[in-house]
Amino acid sequence: MSSRIRLSSWRLTLARVASLLTVAAVIALAYSMRDRADEIAAYGYPGIFLLSLMANAALVLPIPGVALTFAMGAVFDPFAVALAAGSGAALGEMTGYLAGFSGQGIADNFAFYERLTRWMARYGGWTVLVMAFVPNPFFDLAGAAAGTLKMPILKFLIWAWVGKTLKMLVFALAGAHSVQWLFDLMGSSP
Image (tube, rainbow, N blue to C red; front, side, top):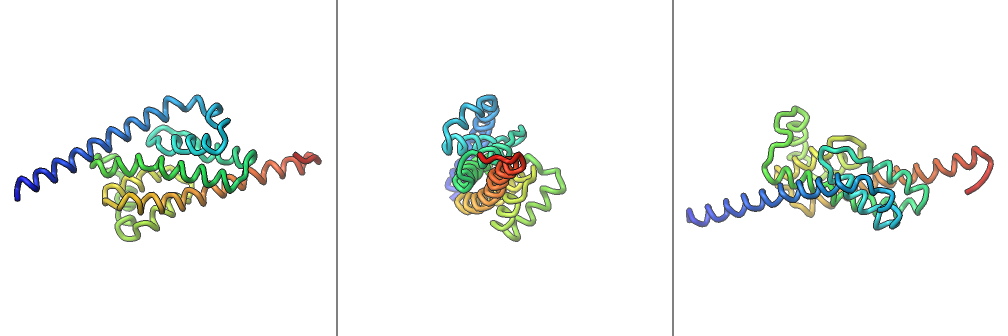
């Protein structure tokens, strides 16, 4: 029995180390590709997906994903932009989840993180959805809280996808309508 517990503990430790290494690799990749955003966006919806994934994978380094969504909403179909950006954003947020799952206390000493963890324990997916929808710099903490509490990955991804896609839809529609408003103001049409 004790060898079974040690094996289970060893597997959990291995999963946590793999999670931490994955987070580090994704952040390094996102940071190294930040100057190539224009090239990637030229690939349309797959480029929007990739840029959104990279923007949301960066735990500490700010990469403006909603600004890209706003701009691309003016160029492409805003609903398709929202789907591509929301899907990339949800997958990118796995870095925060995996950091929490790995057991690394990225925010253990922050009062807000403690409050967020209590909300996550009490309301689960609804907390993920609200934090994903509302533009704020704290979603990584929500992902870490979900990972720490061992929320099932699929559940986290679904709630994050819904919240991120709805948020990206708002920004894509704002981009589409602001460009039209600008042309209306100038007295011409695009």
